Length: 239
Image (tube, rainbow, N blue to C red; front, side):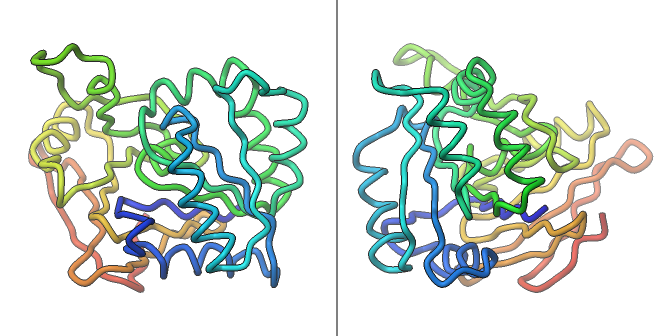
């Protein structure tokens, strides 16, 4: 199973281009079939155009889209799209809403089967959280009324890889909330800055980066304290 989980970065501004190229390489295909699933963004048109520009025009993929929130969505077609793709990329946005829609339509089951068949799985932010046991999610931000406070929270995900994942560590003040989560739950957590990613292959995790000074981290509880270890591009995580 190959999974690439990206902590963040603007795909349209080429901040993740090295990671995007790496994702395509992992398929072993010269012109891979890339399936974009932007459920977390409500299947935003602009996001789809950006993905086509990067993965289609720049990286040479044959791009398809699974639009689970659109009126012409077909569950049967979605299953076929997922199982025929060489790589699946999940976009960012509302993780909780995305996972709920996937479970309603069996998309989560199809993704697991695709992974077992050798499809490369990938994604950014919500699209990275989804593959782990759980994530530190900002999903409540999308439903909070204007002026109403909301908090980052632990959100159960698909469990394809072990641990809790936290994206955007360097950009969205997530360090303290993640410390509190690990201290309370004693769960080992993995965090990534924007421009950093974790490449999982057959249970082994390695750090990739596309921006300078981007790192990955492991937060672990030890004797009532939380230890934070930082890892650079190319490092293997001791998991």
